[in-house]
Amino acid sequence: MPLILAQKNAWNLAHTLMKIVVVFRTEGRDFGVAEAEEYDGDPASIVREYDPFAR
Image (tube, rainbow, N blue to C red):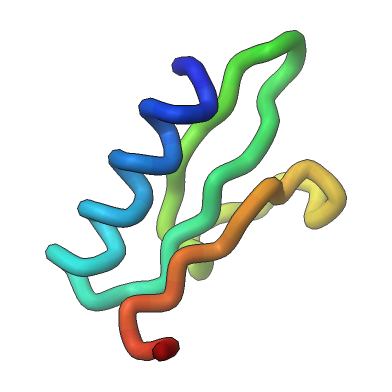
């Protein structure tokens, strides 16, 4: 999915689930979204982390 869509989905998911969510780059130009505790890929692929408890 495009980066802007991944960011919107990640923010929404983080605030709905009240869990830390990461946006990561997949192969090519696409991006993905996953809960931080479930993400087991390369940490260098993480583009942004959304923490619903951070201010």
